[in-house]
Image (cartoon, rainbow, N blue to C red; front, side):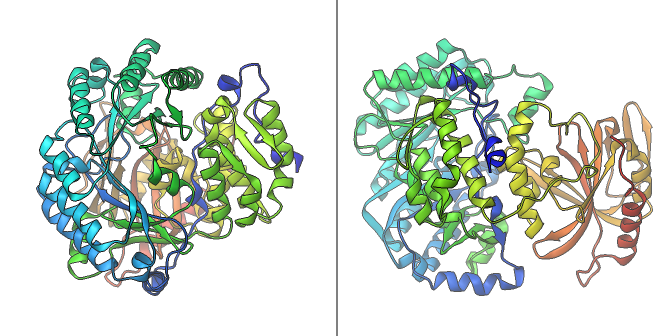
Length: 636
């Protein structure tokens, strides 16, 4: 047990705020969720609709449109300029109306609603009003229901604000990030700092709703002085709430690409982020603000931050809109992100599910841990009662170590976080989640020869060692079911796609050195029609056709003409190729996934399917031939 707990120990230091860990761990409780078999989804979903909700509940409406893609953002999906916003709102209203008749939606009060995205305020005033009115008309909103509209100042006109207020919205959350005009411009934000201040002041002056803004620390080109100015401006405006978020750069984000290219300087490192966080807490407390969670502060009691606190504490969530996620009755569900499919299915009276997952044991206990540590106070006894018996005694040595490291204080089973503990709270949450998941379970070890040794996959530095609990949890998940969208798992967990693929069971994947790129591409050119997929942060692109032969020239591997698949590939960037055979959406798949030195998938080649949906037998035979050919252990 001591060895198991020691991997989660913090460093003992005179400065725990900056030194406790080498990096911040993401919180991804859904990694252990198991997909419901495709054949069982309709029946399971209808059973959930007939089952009353239990406990506190919220609702989420997703508006997946933005006028442009900001560099730091990981949530961009569709351009507002597509001209389908009005028909999309029609579809969401139909979705709300249909679900309103179910026991799942009507069985108890909804305490908070969040219109997020995307950028909800990119909708016009009429569509915003229609959405909010539909929520009031069809859902059992509590008398004091918090109704938040997320937006950004650019394009958010007074008419839109009034439409939201008149329809019943009572809270606005604006993504400010920084008031520094120079930093804003480099991140793709259009409004200048002075204009932004005027915009917020005008909304606050209406005094008809809570107004909150988000600030980010650790941005490229941001200094300690400019961060302090952001804090002073926010505190001196008539805002009701402020969020202080550390910059998180996911591998698939445009910001990550810009940093790799050298287009922007690196943002603050983890120690510098800790300094900026402490400056933020000190400044707001000095101004009389109260800290509600690790990131959120309120000026007075008007701001409750209800949706965010409830959702992290495991409240049930009704989900509406393409790409929205919800939960109820021990299951989590994803609404299909495909706009066309969403609009078509809602027009036929159907819920366009993109996935349905069973949370499994320990989920309620993990929600208690997350909700408690988010607000800086956790009662381990409550976590035990929620489904983790014996947790307090099991983790006691770890809690004592965290106390010694200066991350928390304790009184019996109640833990209270220090300033350092609040900064590192996600590390504490993810550690306790892992221990809850592993109780009574065994960890699936990584094979020594599971993939080639390369500079990307070495685990000698601190950051990689601290990823290990997350990787172990993924291995346990994939040992039960290898289904799931690998890129989505990577984006939401802060891992590269290659790291996620490496957690698949050995029976599902075989890594090959990138030096075999030409040989494998030549082999693929003899397979006949295949499916080529390129998955980026902004889209998934598919092309069916024969893989052309290729040749090297001018630094590229150049595909010959004669096929719908054409282009030029930087073969030197290919660090590894993985042969993957696993179920996806309930169907067996075989693919070859080409990875660059950053761990991103360059492209993927899938075995084609016959008209009846079965895999092409000839291509499967060739795939298995490649598997056998490269099955010999790869030298370290």
